[in-house]
Length: 161
Ligand SMILES: CC(C)(COP(=O)(O)OP(=O)(O)OC[C@H]1O[C@@H](n2cnc3c(N)ncnc32)[C@H](O)[C@@H]1OP(=O)(O)O)[C@@H](O)C(=O)NCCC(=O)NCCS
Image 1 (cartoon, helix red, strand yellow):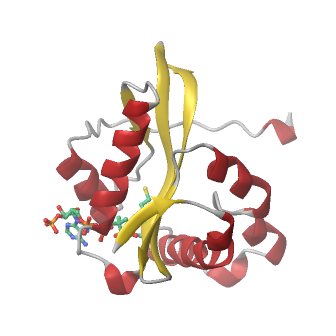
Image 2 (image 1 turned 60 degrees about the vertical axis):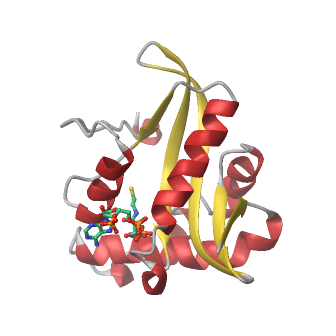
């Protein structure tokens, strides 16, 4: 198992894997039917969507875990210039591991690699958005030492303004 920077050759498998993780979240935690999301909405979901893949590939902070040639995990992240008065924050957009490869330390390794690379690039903090209902994710973040305060990110859709 190796952790390598996200590259163009990962585009299709990482898309499949991220959509699978999103579907799991939608059907499990959100208790909604995947089929209720129309094709156009699904195409835009996730950091691996065609519009954002290149941005994350070029951020230098996105990685995939590979078992041989198979993509078994991903982390999409980027550097944000300022958040909450802190300069250079490594922002985790999404992390996921193939269900058959979970609890093998891959999520932990992906996050550690991001933290090391972020620090190398000048970040002092890593921000990651988590749902308190997502126990695996919450425990992963705790194991890594994240402070998971009771804080959510509010979202304003400017398309409706
Ligand atoms: C969350 C996720 C990325 C964790 O990946 P993973 O490779 O299985 O995690 P690791 O094996 O590195 O686990 C590291 C630690 O996290 C905690 N953890 C992870 N999954 C857990 C689970 N199902 N139950 C309890 N603890 C869990 C444990 O503390 C674990 O350490 P341990 O195995 O020594 O006890 C994976 O479950 C996943 O892809 N989930 C679906 C997508 C998702 O929810 N992403 C998060 C969006 S923020």
